[in-house]
Image (cartoon, rainbow, N blue to C red; front, side, top):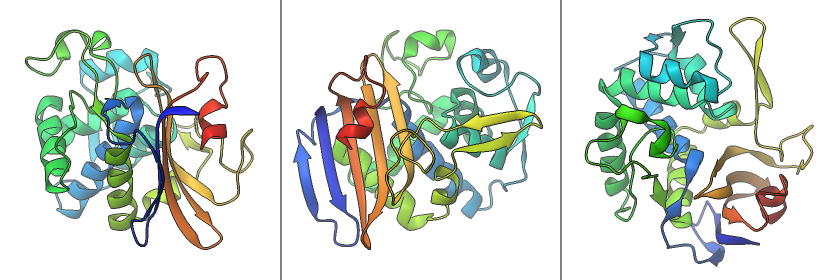
Length: 253
């Protein structure tokens, strides 16, 4: 019950199910699993550490009204910002990490695109690290992009990214399986993944990964789960009735 979908068994890469899985479409905040991959890679390469302090520039700071990152501070650690990016889908945190690693978000986007090409993904169009529509970014849009451009990838592309992320950096699941985490003292980051334990659409075995929602993308979700010892990655893009039914993408998954 979605526009695009795919299910992959990760050990063999066998595709168990697909529905229009190779047509690029809006991916919204599912983008952030690629952003996270680039953060882990930068830590791996010694460019940053988890304790590196990241100053928040005016661009992501002014976006914090759209996210759950508090306006309390202009400085966070890389680990705090990755938690915020993956657990509460904080757009400003993703942008701040991009700027820290590459100097500018647009340069970071170029490294994301290059990473995809290394994996054989050539049909993706990326404009930012967050998955937001360009209309929210004002003068901070990717050079040459249109005012309403948005990141697009296929369900297969998202599954490939998720597979690389989990195989290369399995510790990401320690973050994405959390339903909430303390952030800046009294503030709590809460998940949008309602298939985790204690949530409305709980399913045993699900330990990640990332939701995404925009007008273009609809209600979307890339999940990782262990089903009787078998590891699965599923992608659901633009779930039917996703605008009215908050559970639609989880029911489809």
